[in-house]
Image (cartoon, rainbow, N blue to C red; front, side, top):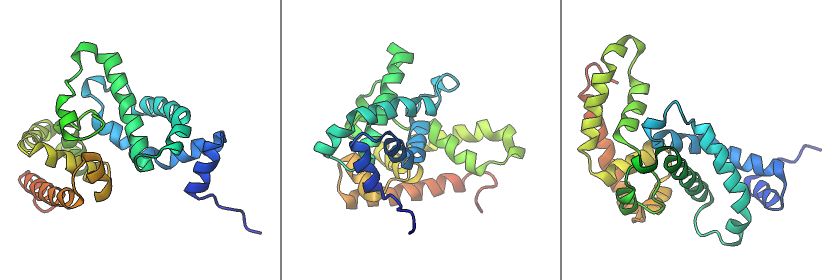
Length: 211
């Protein structure tokens, strides 16, 4: 007889019942997406002092403790709940390390529910250039990154956030609409507009027009 392959629902049921191995497996299924979210939203002043793995380790403890409550009242899709827990832990670590220097979250609150740290233009630019800029062009990377950041900063704030959610965090359109609290059609239209603007930005970089 072939070994039984656990489905995500099976794992979640066993995890809720207290199975520690299943608990770890459930979290592991989403670890890569959560790591990308943390990498985008980790304050750059903490790079070198705080690693995304540190944030995920803390978030896992929150997940293990709060899973039974979520199962009793699942008021958002499971991954978005995990993302919310991880984002809240990231905020706590920002406060712990930065204190009064922490960026005001007011803008994030107005943009979407959960008030996660904003994906900065610097983080987005670094992600883009990490994919596009070869080592042989490292000498001009800093200047290029500043140009990309300036262009991103000229984008509508919500469009930039949609770009972060869809293009970098790889959320679906439905998930993006849920996070932002907007209609699915609006999320889709904003993503198309953001991609068009991103193409313009990248097309303006030296040597990237054919990339």
